Length: 318
Image 1 (tube, helix red, strand yellow):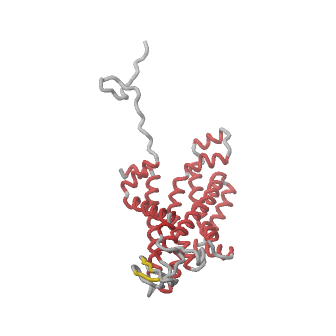
Image 2: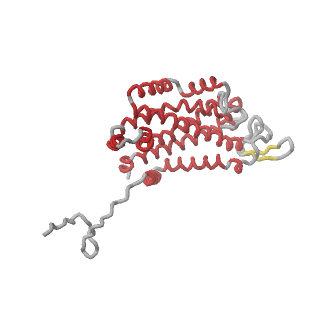
Image 3: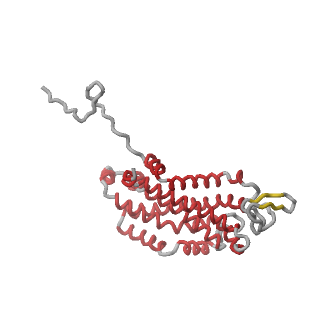
């Protein structure tokens, strides 16, 4: 006679019989946690909305501007005023005109494209190089770790803006590419330290040891096994570094060594209007507000991403 099967833990159906096909609750994904965080954190949701608006503005800038960027009207016209070009064309200026007679609102819209482009490219370059260094240093350890981290310590010892100025001076001339290189070098240490710490914490995990025992290649272990498990803090760090990159680009443009005088960026506009801040404050104030808005938005959204990746904290807030 066979032993009876204990089905006491299985749910019963409506007619009293035991249902042996107990369903396993679905595993919560990152997108579920992010949705939960955005639903409960209005600041993170507001930050995401502002970021989307700025990205939309940068993508469709040619269709959103009222005038061509190089069209000159009467200079130093205040916000909500009308002025004429040399050809007698009348224009309404929501944010006024700058010292060259160009529409400030148009310049701010176009400045969104360059500022976000420089920030995104800077973080991507720093992410790629820093993540590679962190993976190799944490995986191999020993003298490789010591050598690579001493290079990172050397970069970390310099203030980011000073290091960027030195790199641009070495490269010889300002420009979009040189600014991206200069700022991204200053971000390499941030990503390298985070990835190295994550790799050191998961290097002795059982699935990594099993991969080594199965003869999986080292590069495959780093890319297929370690990197996906270390990506959460990297993404959060990237969202927090984008506003820093925007501010760094603005600082370089303010000093006159940014992407160039002919390229409209928020920092270049602030630098152009600093000599007229007493009489024509709008030239510097409106791009300054744009920098402040996007910096706050990325920081608020970054905090929400950090909460979404932190499973324990997400569960505690429910």
